[in-house]
Length: 350
Image 1 (cartoon, rainbow, N blue to C red):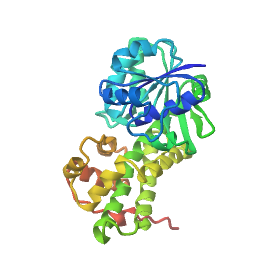
Image 2: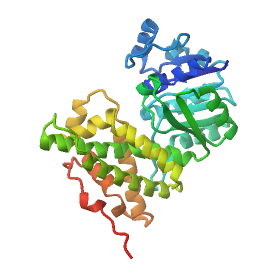
Image 3: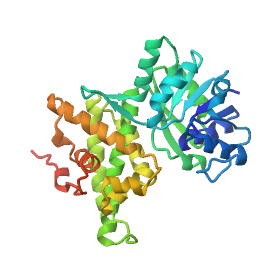
């Protein structure tokens, strides 16, 4: 039996308590300073407020003040924070983890640098470790997985990535179940970029749902041609962006496309995309979804900003990313939704 400590009691971090505990490990779920009400609810009911199923018997719940005790003896630490908690986790949690420990992060996103480079969160954390001389085995989760369906034991395929192959194999052994299937990759940049990119593009696909609701009525049948058209353009642009990252492999794109698919069909990103498509501007959509964490907006803006910088340096062609640029205009310039359909066409002729 191993000891697995999960820091961050959001939906995905909490969902991973299920396969971990069902595999017989001691699981300690620690809330951040923003998770107090969640941990209180878990202590009272043995259930996350957003889930419809109790935690497996034996999961223990801790407020942030108990972090150091919860980390003691941990074989695996899982970072369950959102993109907005990445810096906090880097500065507050990583220094408290014992050297040599395996660390798995569920956080999906990218940081853009002034030179247009897009950096993964594990790379950001590794830089901190290198500066401080601390040694941890950083791994990350990518792939199509919604937390509530993982809790429901829906068949799920993900990819764990990291530089240390032995650490990846250890973490897979701890977490894999008959419903949670795990591929392994050393391509951290590729996997993490792919699953981050899908956020902004899932928002773009959801725009078509709102556009059709505006045209035909909110209760009208779904229209799939338009969704598929934006989906295929999204995959094309994701593939091009992965090449810019030096990670344009089929496996990486497949992981990102799968994650794009599941995100289009549910969750917060779909909600904001639908509202924008109905005609709300970004401020009105945010007001409608007050209190909902919208990581997709951050990713889209960062990636578009990086592409523009690369284009100025002659390293990218903005014309290759009409969907990304339109999504960014909607988010940063309050542009109305006007999907550039004809820019998605291509000619491969002799």
